[in-house]
Image (cartoon, rainbow, N blue to C red; front, top):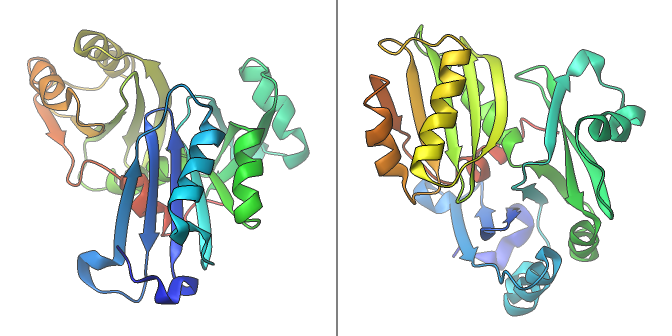
Length: 260
């Protein structure tokens, strides 16, 4: 674990979702791989997410120390994008619920994606933000897709092929497509089985007119079923890769502060 004698110089990034909780400590003054350490905690599915977070705060006392900056990433499918030029902060909630069904006790937040000239609107349980702010009143909130969209936009500029990036979860997949750094698609598909994943990805691939022999597809995220998916996709797409590193790209990217 990162040396917490000087926690004020560290950034704490917390990822919250149904699949579990992750706590990443980034120390800009450390060297090599020790700059970031990640602690995982399985979620108790019988408890609300806020209750799981409180249990972590109670068990891991080091989380109660002061940090230079605290980021909270929500792994959620409840998000929507719009061009930055069309964004008005006072209309954020109205736009969000125009695209998604309204739910009770939800807080609507947003991230500005400067690399993509876009805004991500997303929802999070109000009880989660209340729990976070009880300990970190200046925490910054992000949809998990926000740092991923920014990171993949930069990666996609390399070469002259169009690229699809797939971030896998247990029950769904986030899909991002680019051409020369320009975002073409950002969407989430409910698909837990390999056969369903193959169908959804190839449907998006075909809809965007990607070329089987030339364009590239990259897999990352949850390791369960990832290798099987790569092998199945390879029968249809020539260039299928597992990214390195394949996990925690969101936690690493957030330390670069490209989302607001």
